[in-house]
Each structure stands twice: as C-alpha cells, then as structure tokens.
Amino acid sequence: MISKEVIIIKKHIHNIVLFIIILFFWLLSGLLFKVNNSFYNLLELPSFTLSGNVIGFIWIIIYILNTISIILISKKTNILKNSDYLYILLINYISNQLFMYFFFYLMSPFLGFAITTIIFISTIFLFIETNKISKKSSYFLIPYLMYCSYAFILMSSIYFMNF
Image 1 (cartoon, rainbow, N blue to C red):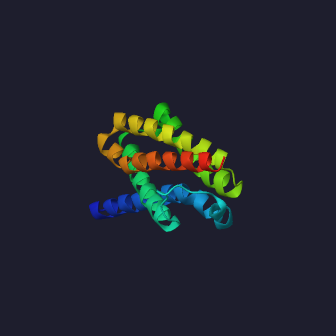
Image 2 (image 1 turned 90 degrees about the horizontal axis):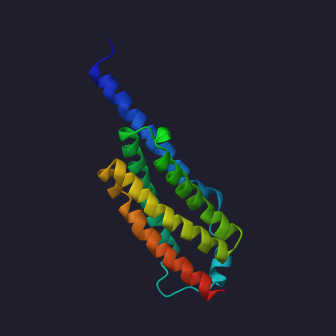
Image 3 (image 1 turned 30 degrees about the horizontal axis):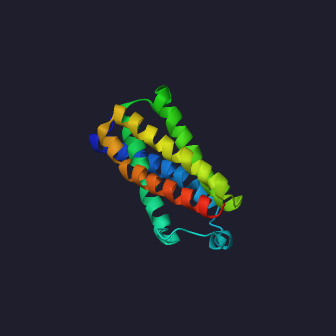
C-alpha cells in the first residue's frame, strides 16, 4: 500500500512537471526567435517605450501567471472538453507565439501590429472564458490583460510612426 505522503509527493511532482512544460511552451517563441536589435533600433519608437530588459522581465512574469491560471483551470475542468476555453486559449497562445516571428524575424511592423491586435482581443476573451470557469484563475490573467493593452497601444504607435 502506498503511503499518503508518497501520493502527495507524486501529486506535487506532477504539478511541477506540468508547470515546467506549460511555461516552456509559453517561452518557446522567445527561444526560437531572438530580438533583432539592428531592426528594432532603426524604428521610430514612442516616448513611452519600455526598455527591452523590462519588456522581457514583464513577459516572463506574465507567462508564469498564465501557466498558473491554466493549471488552476485544468483542476476545475477538462480543458480538452471545454471547447470555448480551449479555442480561445489556442488562438491566444498561437498569436502570442507568432509575434516574435512576424515582428522581429520578418521585420514587419504591420504584421507585428496585426498580431498584437489579435493577441489583445483574444486576451480579453481568454479572461472572460477563464472567469466563467474560475474567478481565482482569471485574477492571474489581469496583468496579461493590462500589459496586452499597453502592447497594443505601443505596437499601434510603432506601426503608424514607421508607416
């Protein structure tokens, strides 16, 4: 018979492994597509642009919070069977991952603006769908929603300033 402590340890190990896997996927595009500083430095930027280090730090925190939110949701519902949540999560995730490719790899302010718009809108819907399942889990998405608002305004400004 397996002791209660072993079961608890296995559960914690499972949660830690799940956390690492989900977080890895959120960080994936940053690992695959690096910031193109030579392209970025050629752009005209608005005065409210944060430094690259600050932006990177903010995204890491947001991805950690997103991961916690997803894990909490997975405790409440079968994500694969909750199609509304799953579809909006996938749209948001894929859009988020495409930003680095579109903006820095393809060096396209327009595509960066377009994908940021999709990220911003899908983040609103992700918050709404998450809130329907778990208010607690949706709280972890508030910084993401706030930062996506900033990113949308920033990318809109960058696009129109460099059009």
